[in-house]
Length: 228
Image (cartoon, rainbow, N blue to C red):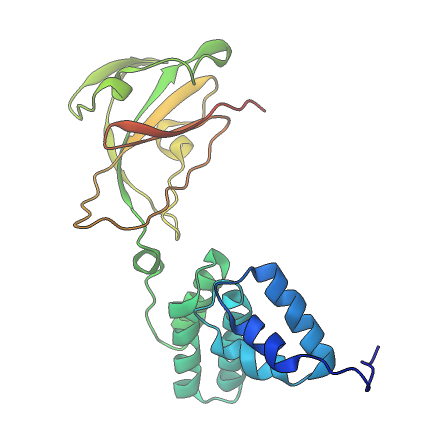
């Protein structure tokens, strides 16, 4: 549906609003959808410039990847490398990062996904500790009291000890089942050391079936007691 010609739309305001990275993303997208009807060419010129924008970064990376694909199809390898590298360095979505890395490798360029995200690959792991009848989350096993990498414990199927392992996944994801063996009604622990010279924002991500807890500097900072 076209816009009424007699309406004086606040186009400059809407453009500034869309460019305002500090504003709510949903509202910015709404403003952009209105601009699509008022000034259809605006989006195409704006989005590729928003590679560092928290709301439109993903859209911008998709456009850059498409530009790289076009250059590669036209056998302009140099231009393809530039576009794929730009996409890789700007992307934060794991799917886009791995896709851009694969594109770079297809044109002979190296891309380190683990370094890009600052992921941790080296871990110590111990388990499984026996935790029958959904008692695992509330039970305090020895590794929660103190971390002794030389210690041995009574596990679900006999004596267990810490094992050093390296995450082999492309995104440095560590599957406890692959190291400890698939089991039920059990608890496992992982441990690693990270040296951070200055205070900095960071994310800790984990998933579990069914519960997950996280300790940082000996203090429990996260715990989810959920049974599915």
